Image 1 (cartoon, rainbow, N blue to C red):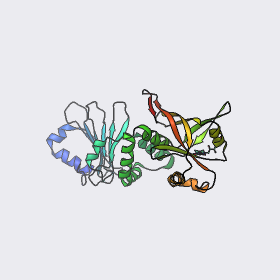
Image 2 (cartoon, rainbow, N blue to C red; image 1 turned 45 degrees about the vertical axis):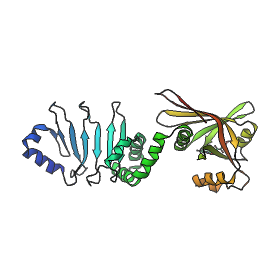
Image 3 (tube, helix red, strand yellow; image 1 turned 180 degrees about the vertical axis):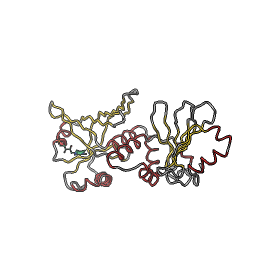
Image 4 (cartoon, protein in one colour; image 1 turned 120 degrees about the vertical axis):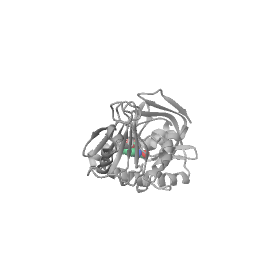
Length: 289
Ligand SMILES: Cc1cc2nc3c(=O)[nH]c(=O)nc-3n(C[C@H](O)[C@H](O)[C@H](O)COP(=O)(O)O)c2cc1C
């Protein structure tokens, strides 16, 4: 995609001087040019400029000939390498396939889905006034790390998948039994260490006492993509110094209230667990660990 030095004005000039291209021209506006490559009367490709009408920064392509653009290639910084490649599928769901100027097109093969980032973009625009260009800049800076993280999530199975879900949900709800009454409260601590999934609490809390009386718990978490996770498990205490340090390192804000030797910090791992991933659109999936 060598659009580095091409402006909308230059492109229009070229189209005007080229009978073949001008035959394909469907629409030409201040900031966009649409061409009908296959002559079916519908535009197959659209070139759009940045907000000041200078260089081309977006190419939209109608891959399936439906008249809807379903592939968008953005080059925000105009260096000729796409910063974002965006697919829109049949259901109108948007997926970024690759981003970051340093990203080689080979990354396309990863097919990484980060629809959530697009929702984040809407949110950032609305609530914080952060523009798409700012977001693109952020994505570029973080592309490599984020792609690695996303790839891990895409391929995670078993307990790893459960860990990523709870970690990314940030808050989950832990239910315990208090005599013959249920008790539930928000929790956020989560650590995967040597194949065990840990949560953390303080011995002074009622929740700790309830677990001491009855280690059977249930955990529930959900995400705003219409999925939820429910885990039935027993909690087993692990008093090792090492695992407490790892939890504090992973969640440094806990250091204000806990330390490994304070006699209060308490670590539990889940055992005999049955985790069920559910959604409104797919069959539930069960993982045991
Ligand atoms: C988002 C969020 C995450 C929390 N994470 C934890 C946690 O991981 N461990 C913990 O002991 N308390 C956590 N808390 C605080 C507990 O929910 C709170 O102390 C609760 O009252 C404990 O239950 P209990 O009153 O039955 O002992 C969290 C609170 C919030 C709002």
